[in-house]
Length: 428
Image 1: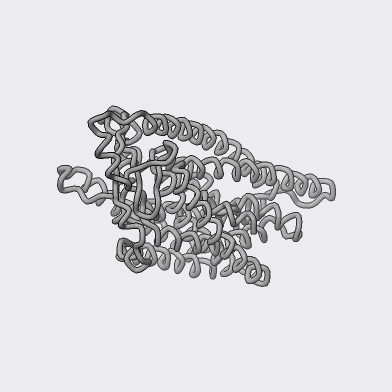
Image 2 (image 1 turned 135 degrees about the vertical axis):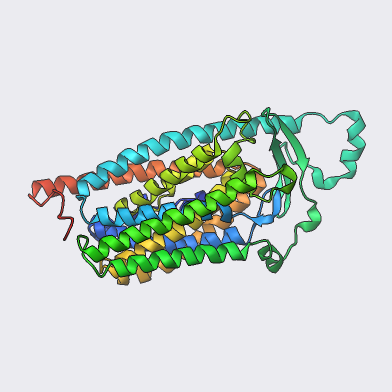
């Protein structure tokens, strides 16, 4: 329950916590823990996704926290990686999975900690800029405008009201008041109007088609002709969908600035203007292809090791300059699709303990809803997005220690009792 309170608020699922705890406390094998972990993660992600869809994006009240444009481009690659990871889970021995997971988490901890440190230092600079005395010719105007005030030099955001930091090509930041406090009391229905439901439907269709492939594949052995044909069709489907959305995004980027209707966060991924990347240095096609590859690796890791995949792609999206609050909400949406696919794939193959899933899933759903609400309010009150990165770093580091200790103990026990520690047959 405590894992669910913090994990989704930072944009990760909590797999590195659930897997070792279920393995040691309940006594499940790592394969059983993987399926149950993804069930819990998917259920918790539902609560966090609802939060992200019903809260506006800082500086862009016409968009929800969840970035559906980013999700549409990257989820096909994530799901394709999932299908590979689920296959590998039946073959790779448990001790090797522990080694791979520990090495991966150590690398991610290092990268995320560096990003968190830079974000914190940048926010400190912004606080000092806001705290500087206001020139005399602006003082009267500032006194009359209560909605533009900040408390203690901290960028203050509540509801739709936000003091936004905008970066130009030269990396300098200007303060602008984005929205007035009269918008604070927007109702839930009005907030939901900003959600692009057509894109949400596209995501659901994509998920349903992919899940149908997984369900039909489960009826055949890995080495049968039918399975290989279905896997090939699934691969073509994922690549085609990814190419379609990438072409649409690049076509919008090629239009004059006044005619562009693209997503601000996707624009930042492609060009890096807010991050101070010099014009023309970041190649949009190269960035997208690299990102798609990383999402595919994230999905494969998720299916193999029992994590949601966000531990890998979440820090990478932060490195590309996305807002940490948007990254956290969008990552949880992608976790929902990937973990639910893995969980149902395990169910189709008879590898999911449904009795424990029914018990743990509702508890973690409630805990996740509480966690994202509390952390969201904390970020709004302090104006520090780096809080999310700090939480993320702490969770990954703790998960690394747990996975290495408990997984290593289990591997040593298997060796002492002369259990099979080799690869299992692929065609079994």
